[in-house]
Amino acid sequence: MQRSRAALVSALATASALALGFGFRTHEPGRERPRPMISSLVPVASLRNPGRPRANRPVAPPLPHPARWLAFGGGAEPSSNQVSMENDLALASDVFGGGGILLFAGGPSSQGVYELATEAPKDELALELADLVSPHGGRDARYRKTRLSPHGPATREAIVAALEVELATPGSPLLVYVDCHGDGGVSIQDNSLATWGGNALTVKELTSIFDAAKRPVRLVVSACFSGGLAELAVQGGKPDGGATELDRCGLFASTWDLEATGCDPDPERRNHEGYAVHFLHALRSTDKAGNPLRVDFDGDGEVSLLEAHTQARIASKGLDVPTTTSERWLRAVAPPRGPGAAVALPEEDATIAALTVQLGLLGDAATVEADARRHLDEFETRYAVLAEAESRANQELERARSAVKAELFSQWPVLEDPWHADYSESLALEHDAIDAFFNESQAYADFIRARERVDRASEDALDVSLDRAPMERLVRAIDNRLLAARVKHRGGSDWRHYEKLLRCERSHLPGTR
Image (tube, rainbow, N blue to C red; front, side, top):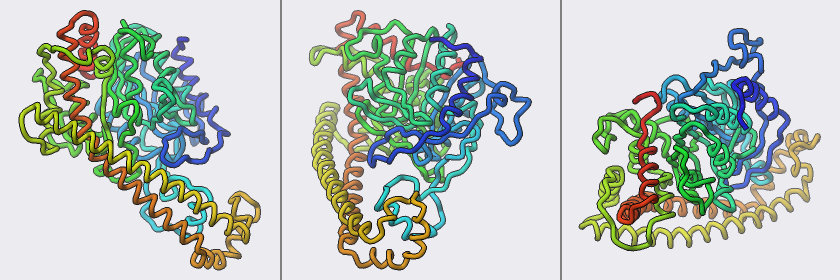
C-alpha cells in the first residue's frame, strides 16, 4: 500500500496519539523484547503547520520530500532508550547532511532518554524491595528530554508510513539507517526491530515493504540480531529465494543469531562502543575519537558504505560480528568445496590484515586461518559451558527470590503490590522492621549470594563473548574470500548477483557522488 505525503504527516502525529494509554510489561532479563509504553503526543497542527505551533508544544521540522535518507531508532520504552542511541542518531544526521527524515523514540516531546544517574539512591531499602519483587532495568537512571529535533516518533506506524511514501516513487537510492534494539525470533524472518510503543517490525514485514519499493535502497542497521535483514539479498526475503532483481542491499551490526553492542546509558560519549559509532565516524575518515584515519581501502578517493562497515569490523571492541547482504548470498550459493578464482576484495583483505595483527596470530595465510578456526572453536566450547552455568545460576536465583518473597510477604503482604493504597504508608511505618528483616533473614542472605553468582556467571560469559567476537570476524572474512573465489570460478548468474550486491554495498552517501 502506498501512502501520500499528507498521509505520512498525519501518521507521524497519529502514531504518538495511538501510543497513549499503553501499559508496561515486566522486563525479561537477558532479552531485548520490544515492550509497550506511554508515548507523548505530537500534535497534528504542529506537523502540518510548523509556523503556527500550539502553545507549549514542541515543533517538528518540516518534512523533506523526496528525502535523501531516513533514520529511525531509540528504545521501545524508557529503560531501553539509552543515551548512546540518541547520540548515534545525532551523529548520523550530521554525517548524512540535509534532506533527511529523522524519527526518534516518542518524537519531539520525548522525555524518555535514559542516562545513568550520578547521585546516590535516596532510599536503599526501596531499591532492594524493588529488585526483589519486580526486577526492572533503568532504576539507576535519570530521564531527560531528547536533544534531537526529530520529525516524529519512531513508532511502527510512523516508520512504515515514511518508508512507503519515500519508496513509492522511482528516484535516487534512499539510505535507511536504523539504530535501535533487536530481538531474535523462532526463524530468521521472525527477527525484529523494536519501535516506540512496543509493536516490533519483523524481517518478514520489512522485506514486504522493501519488495514494493520503486526506489533503490541502502539499509544500515545497528541492532542485535540485525543480520536477519540480510535476507533482502533474495526474492521475498525467503530462505530459499533466488536473486532479487531489486536494487537493494544492507549492512548490519550483527549476524541473525548474535547480539551486538551499542545500547549504553553512560552519559559520557567517549565511553560508547559498538558498530554505529565506528561506522558513522569512518564515513568521515576518522576514528571514534575524531582522529584522521585511512578508510579508503580501494583507493578510489572516497569512503563507501562497505568501507565504513569494514572499519567497524576492524575497530569494534564490542560483541559485534557485522555482516552484509553479499555475505548472505555467498553462504547461500557457494559450493562447499572446489576450485576458486582470483577476486579483488580490498575490504576483506583489510579486515584480515588488521585482525590478524590485533589477535597476535603469526605465520603464513594457511597457518593464520588454521589457528583462527581453532581459537574460535575453543571460544565456542567455553561459551557453551559458561552459558549453561549462567542459566543454572539464574534458576537458583529465582528459587532464592521465591523463598525470600514468601517469608517477606507472610509478614507484610502489602509489599507485594507497590500500587496498593496502603503500600507507601506501610513502608514508612514499618521501614526499620523491614530493614531489620533484610539484615537478619537467612533466605535474603541466600538471595544475595545467588544474585552475586549470577553476576559473576554473566560477566564470565560476556568476557568470552568479547574475546570471541574479533576471532569470528576474522574467520568470516577468510570465509568470504574463499566462498567468493568459488562462486567466481563457477561464474554465471550467482556470480553476477554477488557483484551486483557488492556494487550496491560500495555505494557512497546519497547526494555525495
